[in-house]
Each structure stands twice: as C-alpha cells, then as structure tokens.
Length: 159
Image (cartoon, rainbow, N blue to C red):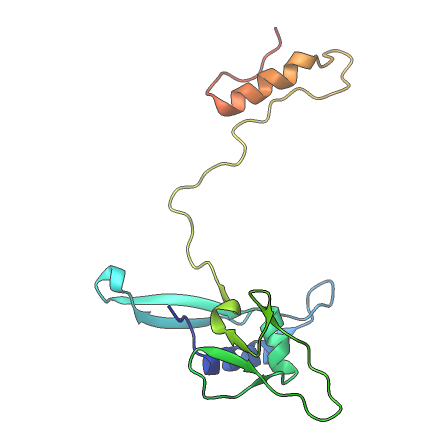
C-alpha cells in the first residue's frame, strides 16, 4: 500500500526543512513539522482516519540539496541525473544501485495515541545493594531475584 505519493514526499521534505530549528542543545537542525493525512479506513467501515507522518532526515536533506527530481513516476522518488562536474551519491535499494526509491523508505509514522493499558517496566526494585557491610550479597541473591522476575513471588527477602 502506497502511503504517500512522491510529490507529497517532496512537499513534506520541503516543509519540514523550512520549519526546522537549531534550538536543540546540540545545534543539530530538527523539525517538529508533522503532516496529517485523513483518509477512509477500510477496517473501520470507511470512516475517516487520521494518519500523522514525517519524512526521514535523510529525505529532508535530499530535498534540501535538490537530489530528488520532480517527476511523473507515481510510486517512486527519482534521483536526478548529475550535471557536468557534479558527483551524486549512489543509492542502494535492496543491495543494488538504483535511481528510483519507493516513498515508503522515507516515511516515518508518528505515534498519535497512548497505550490503552499501561505496563510497568519494573515490577519491583528491591534487589539488595552491593557492598553493604550490614547485608553483604551472596551468590544465590541474584538467582532468587531473577526468579522473581519470571514468576510471581513475594518481594525479595534475606533468608
């Protein structure tokens, strides 16, 4: 399924570059510009569905530097031909040099929802600290602790 057309990729890349800023602490230029496509969702009976996208930094730079051409291809972004005394990089698609690149390679899907059920990453944090003179760790302590992670058990306790 084609997510966006090559013309949309070029427009999104141009807009992302124009709306980028060097406000990041590294002074690396970044963009928070997001494109939203509203299309019918066949899984929801044809009701409208919001799809937020961004274009990869690589594609944004290729648009900025004029590497991608405006073309009539309906599925691929096309790398323009190099002019005299100009060197353009080769682009590998599936391990082979190619001038045509599917738009799907440049599309970055933006997460537009929160999880329905929150899952905690850490179920407990009661593993005894090392190098405590009052409670020195034993070899079996880590084994007991890891067993608690895979099976429900009571909090770690010294025996």
